[in-house]
Length: 469
Image 1 (cartoon, rainbow, N blue to C red):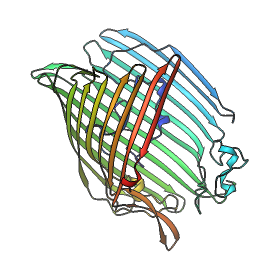
Image 2 (cartoon, rainbow, N blue to C red):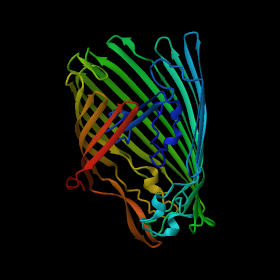
Image 3 (tube, one colour):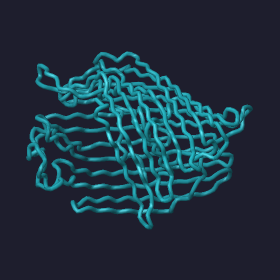
Image 4 (cartoon, rainbow, N blue to C red):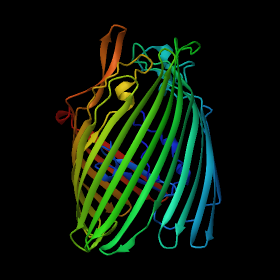
């Protein structure tokens, strides 16, 4: 969001509800094998959302918006935004703010639960809604953007939420989680700025930087029965993640571009358990990537000049854990990434042929290494990084009224982190371990288009079981 990676944290996951999509200036979905410039732990695709960041000129949004929705289970969703743009000496300003509220009593069970195996007491409390699947969610955001007349820009965005929610118990588990989050909160602030495209001694180039501060907290209650009346264990956690991302771009001659990105993340987590007290954890991750793109011709492409182009990228990534809560520290780990991509526009400008190969690594998170999840897991500080090697080949065809994309893919995940069962003196538990390899092969087809007043889209993925494992 606004140049700040959101999946660097205690568990290297994020909640998309932290992103104020009602105020987004742009949303880019990079499917498949992404660039090496997006930082550490990016194995494949990227969702990039800009609220106030970007080099594009300002477009004044509506001064106020409001939306509401309800469902047959009593769920309610409310949201609203306000915005104001004005000019000042030397540039333009845009200020936005908004908030939302979501109340969901629960998730519906298909066919009242008929045909679903498992303990009925873990499935539902009243036969219609999934047990312990309620959510009450409040969120808000504010953003300020300045666009200079010379192309430079700056932006500040802050977004947060506060939620109370249940965790539906696993009906296929002999010992399911009986958890609730009575309070969970998160605030992300992103400060970004860029020079825009400037002329240098060697051509045209630009520089951009983003600083991020991610603060979060959660409280977990564990119960002894699916009636959720008696709390037997509790866990509290506080997260603090600071990130820095610097991206530079410069032209090479008339047909080439050189891009370089440095990403750094510093993650701190404090754990408080009723049984063992307080522990502190810290992890640092970094990545330096460089990518060169070359256009073989000057004919128009889908996103500018260059119908046929090749891109080559290399990165070096690293991680360490200077604080491990009293557990063995994870030594410094390092790995490398690479990507080769090729695309060609043909068929009178309607058919794009594209393909690529990629190698990327993902370092295990603090949660995967050290968390025992209220006694359910046996920590494993010896986890190694996952390494994904993948290739894809496909076409995107723009026809009248419909766009079609067909991509064949092959992925091999070495040292994939999976969950297994283990026997301990305290009884059976789960543990995360590295597997030798996880292989997946298949074909994905996507179509979208319009027919009169109707818009439609579809996605079909066909795995090839004989080539996976």
